[in-house]
Image (cartoon, rainbow, N blue to C red; front, side, top):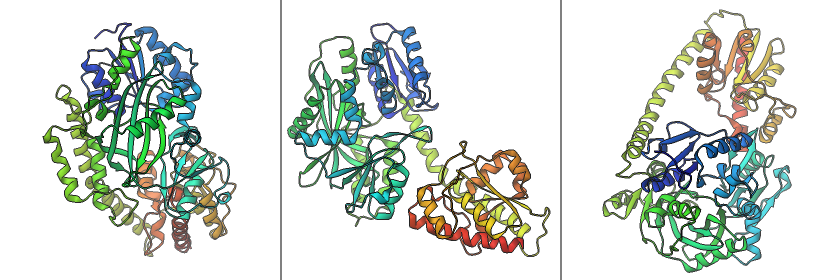
Length: 572
């Protein structure tokens, strides 16, 4: 299908759920679509309307992304650019408001966009104009968790910005509900070096989204939905949602908030509503939302509206929709079901559902009131691809368990043959190499502990992570200090072929490292073993403390101390 200057559309991050919804909406109208994707094999790539697929640059490569978009625009002359996620929205935000590409995206002004992208600035604005917000405070980037006394539990920790540069990579940080001081400290130790953190009072209830589309300062579409299934169960993105009745209070408050910003284009104002009707503002999503398939299915075709606005066509405001219509993200809702089945229903923080209601809910599709995201009769390849993905996922876990059990049995047998009392050392051990993934938690602790307990050996450590020079996390440094090991000056190293070749014995922490050795250094497998096997009765695999609480990190360190002592006895 050839493109024309008056109608062609560039959909950025088209392999997202919102991107797929845009493709299916505009594709049905016969609009030429150019779909940017970040990875191959996405559901969007299976859509009949994804006829022009372009591989996007890396998220962090902003200058490269601008050049890439300009080249495409010069060739196809787009009428509209649609950023389907915050990552591509940030690309466009980096352009001047007068830039032709930026203008094609129908975005608000810089200051309005920046306020919406900042949870703290959004909260401050909402509080100033009298909107209900949870109690919160801002913990400054670069400070220590110990600098901020807890205000009580449970609470919610939110990065001030969802997209954060971590080790040169743009990461997405999701809010975390914390119940105790150790979890709070662990999260803050990971986040505060990179971003301001909003510590917010936890408020009960479920998520409610108010979606609005603005053109030339006027609201041209409105919609309200409520989340029925949220993942994680403490509150998050919806896997099942329902079109709500027009809630005039929420609509009015949302319009007042966006009106203060002189909004342009799309936005979802996210609220949390308790059973007693109390509401609190959560944030503004200044982009298309993951529940966009429901919005379209309920009769508010936002992508079509954006295309008409960009084309300068008159737009009839949309203020009504199919109430009680629902939409389910099949792949994510399977994960929600697993979580709901295993959930502690006595926990007041979890948004659970009774098992009869959960199973009966799947029958709703036969009533004609529920749709499944991306599943369209005119676009069947998407549903077929998702079914295949779900089936592979259900089969993958048992297969993975069997494969790992076999690998574990082989490594245990090889260890026994080499290190049991009657085994012979084929190669005298003078050089020990400890490996883990990042070389910032387990292997540096093992290295320095082994250097102290086995001074006659040449001991070093490294990791499979491609970036050297990283420091150990604060909670790991603290846990190591309990055992008189100082990691404050630690700088990680990436493992090299020379390190592996020089090592008489290579000691790894878990089976994933054994697999990496098999893939990268198969010639060294006979010299590779698990540290946990030296601690009889202890765990064979030693968990990665990177994301663990300080207490659980201490448990791992204790297991490592016993394993290193067992290794020292074996080598003596």
